[in-house]
Amino acid sequence: PTAVPTAEPTQAPVEETVTATPAQVGMSYGVVPFDLAAGTEQWWSIDSSDSAYWAVQENINAIRAAVGLSPLAMDGGLSAAADARCESFVAGGAFDHSGMTTRSEICAAGPIGSASSVCSYWQNSPAHYANITNASFTSMGVGCWFCSTAEGQYTYWTVTFN
Picture 1: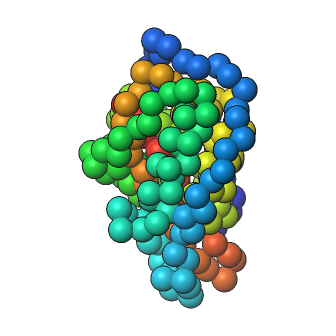
Picture 2: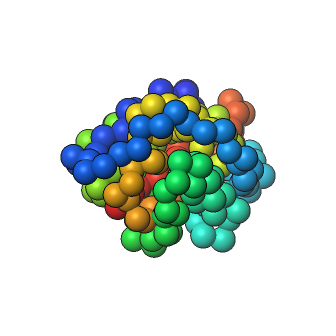
């Protein structure tokens, strides 16, 4: 796979957004289980049984807490939507927000093998950070598809919000 630049997030009009400078927070590692995919040339996905799934939620909620916002609850329907977005990217769909079915989403793609890495990226991207710190959001979902090939490890990440 070739590294794909991350698309800027889009969303419906925002009622209230915190515009503080990103606070530095400790991140939960949450490694993607690439060993499952080693040498298979197949795509795999994480779910609620994987530490990376919960680490994304912990990291996003730590970022929110640093600016005084309430934590986001994990929502199975939003996770299903996030998973479907990642699956569409794997299938060759456009890596943008044109297929978004939720109120907002953030995405990333590339050799990003842990929840801490992807959340650090989002935290340091003003547009992604604005979504994470949107005070009107109350829930989130997580999706991640990954493979490990001779060319290296590759992931697609999506977090959906409502």
